Structures are given as structure tokens and as C-alpha cells.
Length: 137
Image (cartoon, rainbow, N blue to C red):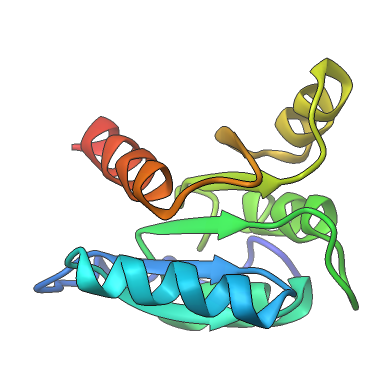
């Protein structure tokens, strides 16, 4: 049941850990490679169910969440992460080709902390990750 497990102790890391959740393998790998080159440790997920599993066990510093995903979409995955006391504090950045005010509202209601439209150049995404992490310090 969400929120019933004890809170995990803070994780000490040399480099920030980023979870990239993207169903398009080539785009996911591009973002993962660029993040790694830029000083981040990266884990990858191709669907919302894997995103929840990775987030719950690895406790990344930030989650980059595509919203249109197979198995479990990004809106539902984000909502589940934000409703779980173990993962609620982890910032989720909606990374999606859906744009417009309605999609921004939907992502915000699901619990996304930020919204980045695709296509997003890797450099802009890395800058956003850095901004999100800096805002938590």
C-alpha cells in the first residue's frame, strides 16, 4: 500500500542520479548518453511501471518522465510516485510532445513539478535537470 513503507535514508552519491523514462529507445539512449557525459549517473525505464520500480528502489535525484508511455502512462506513474511517502519528494519533470495549457494542467495535477516540451535538445534538458537539482539545494 502506498505510503506505508518506512522512509528510506538519504542516499549519498558522488554524482546525481537521473531516471529517464522514455519509450522511444533511441531518444532515451541519446538523453542518457548526454546526461552521463554531463556528469550524471543515469538509469533508464521504457514504461511507467518500470519507472515506479526503479524510483522506489534506486531513489533517483530527479525523474524525467515521458507522459505517453506503454503499460502505465506517465500521468498515472507520476501520481503513484507522488502518493508514496518514499518517493513523493523526488522531483518529476514531464518530458512530453503534448503541449498547451491543458496538458500542463494535467501534468501538474498528476504531480509533475516541471514541464519540458519535446523535442527538447539534450543541452536544454541537461540545463533543466541542473536547474531542478539546484532548486532543491
